[in-house]
Image (cartoon, rainbow, N blue to C red; front, side, top):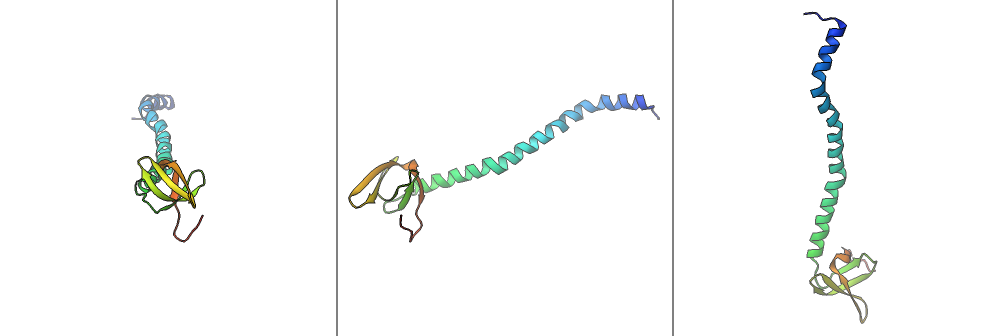
Amino acid sequence: MMFSGAASAILFAAQSPAGNGLIAFLPLAIIMVIFYVLLILPAQRRQKKTQAMLSELKTGDKVVTSGGLYGTIVALDGDAVQLRIADQVKVKVARSAVTGIQAEGKEG
């Protein structure tokens, strides 16, 4: 069956809308997957790692707070941590303010 140029254009236009919508959605789906892999997954991993570190805090750990205080944990009170930042100087900070544990051998 041979069709003229106009007839084949009409046939193509009649078949195109269903496939065209899927093709138009494909780049958006690819962008969403890339966004998830590059931004959301690493953030979730980082949050889980931080939560694990906060739950494993114990007396004697040397930590750094989000405010830049270096100290040693002397007491744990639920959602708070008591730090010794100097001789006879103790401060109470939120557990969530602890951003990291100091590496052994490093003094603040």
